[in-house]
Length: 573
Image (cartoon, rainbow, N blue to C red; front, side, top):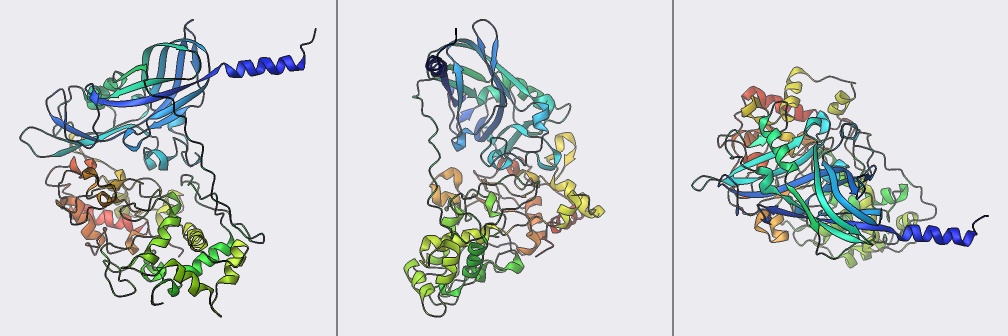
């Protein structure tokens, strides 16, 4: 006898209704107390005072054990956890109701996944290098866990530590007992105790850093500690599902506009592009003209291109730019390329999107000092009217601040840098000189005297094909801060002296250097990192872990670093 179609539908509905959702909320602790990130207040088992500024890790291969002993495994599942950045929750969906007795997962990635090409992952995927900042660039593979911070003895100076657990043998498996009677949606609390992770490790000259090289006893001990650092219990937090992606603002594009694909190298991670502002020939051309339009300034004397010149990789050759009315700014003009991979803009990160960023200099009283209504009026007048160009790009002659921002956004998103001699070397189309190769090796090697490694440690902040990261860092320019950088925006002491980490692509063209343009040459920059770093409470741990005397690179090695950096210059400009 056949089952009626309506009954089949009902049975399917019942089956679906029994699929539960399990939200896992991750709490970070230090020896049983809630973690206070960027606060020198936690005591290690060896009695040292410690501050944690980074605790990031990748999870994979999650599974739940049923009461009958079998395991329910979620296939192709990964998560990136970064509690200090608010990434402390993940959700397991489609779980059948029932009793579960264990939770198992891996910290890290299985071998095949670890060594897969990271470039194809979607913009928001946990394994996209721009999302997690944990891919080990040219050396291949991911850092499974990054624990960084500062520490001090009772009567000693402030120092840094940097623990990066990586490589296939360091894959960690965590299995925890569980008493979960899943009946509908529920939440669990997964606690990660960084105090247990550090354990009895006494921070000192021989234990400030690890990159998990073969035979590294410190890395092995940290791996074992990590597997014992987790605990699980029912969560007292209400279930809060991820908010659905907000609908994009209205897409505005002329029916006759010709769409342009966003083309970038296969080695670059996938960026997140604005879905409501598709690139098109007419919009990009409008943005190009607006970028060079002096009517955007109060006295019609200054354009965006005045302070961001193509010959200098869209930077200014002066320490600080001079505004339309002669006022000097206080920060060096940042380069404008590969902007699709950034998550915030300006040295202090105050603009969350490129579209927000482009309008701020126009209205800034020190820079172009114009109002947007006045800009709109000037662009609409007489023979110099932009109305036809706006119609070609957006479908009507209406000129608005939003459309100006969209056009500038389109133009700037198409400014890419990926065709340097370095890139040709990576594609086996050219070769480094011996000096450049030495510089490459120094750039991508850590400074770890404990293991006889004396690299320059540049890759921690300027790694991967973009030679940048999305974090903010204090790179030791000053012990006290005239400019608090990101701290001015967040009002957090832990952000004082931190600035955006710019790309090193085209770095030979972007002098002078640093947020205030204090260094005139690349040689001065290298000399700063060699032994000019100033210590302060927010100094990046990957610099603070170095001895007070600095890296002490020889003159020959310093020259080799500069020679390598010059290979990053775009050759087709």
